[in-house]
Length: 271
Image (tube, rainbow, N blue to C red; front, side, top):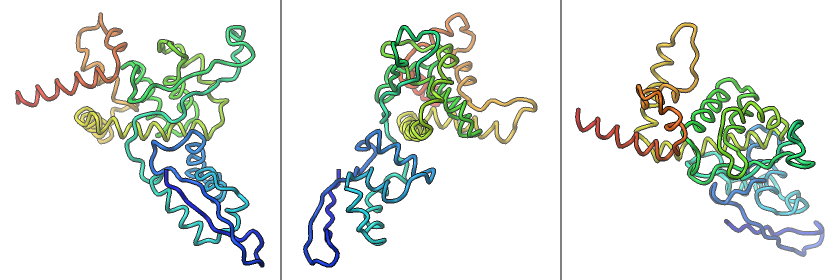
């Protein structure tokens, strides 16, 4: 964290000064869940500069109101990293609480289930889960449809020790939609950072993915729309081993990506 100190006059016409201290995060790893939500508000222009600075620095609003335009500009400069969406490998919003579900309400009591984000570096996320989440995320970027955003989050956030299943998305996405919109948008911003980390961790795979996306964009098939290439990549990876499709889908995503990277390198050496 980067410390910041503001010197100000409590009473403008009396030449007596006080100082107040706060601190700014210097990178995504130091951003809290509340601060990430404030960043999402900035992206959507739903927050004032003063409210944003207060959220990011914990400086009192009464002191921030005494700053002039130049001082606010210098404070904003401390947060330049938020405009550069560099790779980051974990979710900042660790958990979300759904509103009470109708049928299984007795199981959760008065409140709905508490869902948890995947661990750092997507540890524990299966290949099948990733395919669904990444597909809905790609759809959301293209359509800006909140249903796609809600399904993306429902695919990623699970209860403790809960195994992913497509039926969970159908059962929960409408309830995910009741969560504050900016919180959901903050999770999407966070996933973009994780996507950048995946591209650095597995450059060969994401290079192939991007080539497939570019090819389909240049030569679209009439009457079809496949907004994510992962299904085709999965089919190519499994080949004719249809009996074991579920086994591949249930493997951790990092295990699959490491295996695919090794295969790509082996093929490159052969050619």
